[in-house]
Image (cartoon, rainbow, N blue to C red):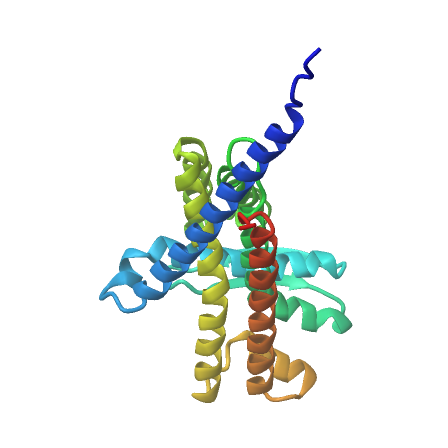
Length: 260
């Protein structure tokens, strides 16, 4: 009696190929998102067209301060986004946690970008990009309601939070998986690279005597020069980005097709 061939091997091969195709697409989307992000730096008036993206990164930055305050057992009074693209988070932490609260903005943005990069390589039912966009939309809505809801004294933050939240939730629903994955990767790269760019600007402003920034506040709290803190955050952000990319490409390479 002939023995029927097992379907298990064929199913495993199909699954491997599917994972391989997904990994290749994830890497391609990340590379394109990075290329476009870098290219936009040389496009005239790109910063004006990408103003909503600047507000998004600022929202992530200020949320990093707020979450750092909560992690250290402190409290958050308010979170404010300004039309210039700057932001301000008021909170209360114990003196020995000041370093975490002040570092939470720049390092939080870098960590957020790294987290989004890792999420982009996870294969989910539907789309990891859709999930990421929806999760970001919900998070911004919650943070806005908790700390940015000041309709009379600060309507701009409320509007920004509402528009970003609605936009991300809407895009998470209407975009096709490939489009959602690309947008999520693009936002992840923007946060990762903007964290470095913002720290560069911070170092420049500090050297010019600008006294209202996180590095200067760290200098006042811990006596070490503001330039030291700016450079330290830059090194930490580069380390986070390097480690995240290393994990990302090693993980996706495992599913790449192999030649025997």
